Image (cartoon, rainbow, N blue to C red):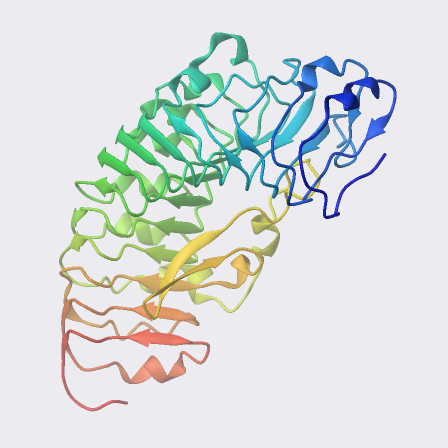
Length: 377
C-alpha cells in the first residue's frame, strides 16, 4: 500500500493497526496528516517502507513535511529503522528514540532540554550517523555525553535556544564531518578537544557569544572546508596556523573584534585560491541512507542578505572578514578566484590592489566603510 505524494487530510485511523502483513509506504509529504492516533510499536509485523532499505538493511519511517502535531509517539526501540519527522508541528520534549542511522526531528516546535535524550543509558550504543535537531525550541546546556555517540558524522543544532559552553566530549567524535550549532547562546571558548575531530569538514558556530581567539590548534583540522564564526565576540588576530588549511574554501569571521593586519599568506589557502573543483564529492556526504547525499549546507550573508547554499556548495569560495578592527593594507597577493570578498567595516588603508582585476570570478566585492584612498583600478 502506497499513499505518498497525495492530498490526504484528517486523522490517521487506528484501523491501520489491522494491516499487520502489508508493506506500507507511509504518507510521505502528504502535507495534511494532522495527528497521530496510533503507536507504531503496536504494528508488530508492519514493515514501514517510506524508502527502500539501505545496504545495512535498515528501513525508513518518513512522515516529513506534513502538519502532524502533538507529542512524538513511542516507536519500536530496536534501532532497526531511520526516522524523519521534520517539517511538522510536533511539540513537547525529545523522547527516547533508538534509530539505526538517521534521526531527523528538525523544523518542529520541540522544547526543553536535550540532556535526557543524549545521556539516556539504554541508547548509548547507537550506530546513529546523522542527528538533525535544528530549527526547534530546545533550551538549556548541551550535555557532556557525546562520547556515547561515537559514530556521528553530522550534527545540526542550529537555531535553538541552547546555552552554556560547547562540551569537551564532542572532541571524542573522531568520525565527525559536520558540526552546526549556529544561532544559539553559547559562551566560552572554542573547545580545544575539537582538534581531535580530524575529519571535520564543516564547522559553523556563528551567531553565538563565543570569546577569546580563533585557536591556533585549528591547523589540526586538515579537512576543514567551511569555517563560519560570524557574529561572536572573538578577539585579537587571525592566527597564521589558519592559513595552513589548504582545503578551506569558505572563511566567515565577520562581526567579531579581530585586530591586526590581513595576513599576506592568503594564497596558502589553495582550495580557496585554485580554480579547481576537486572537492565536489566531499559535499555529497556518503551517508548510507536514501536522500541524504545533499543534506550538507552553509548559510552566508551576501549583500546584506542571508543565503543558504546546499547542492552547489562545492562551487562556493568566499572570504568575509567584515565588521572587525582589521588595519593595514589589502594584500597585493589577493588574486584568488573568489566569488565573494568582504572586507567592509574595518580600518583598512592604502590603495585597492591593482591585481584585484584578475579576480575574474568575483560576484560580490565590498570594501566599504574603511580608510582606503587613491584610484579605483
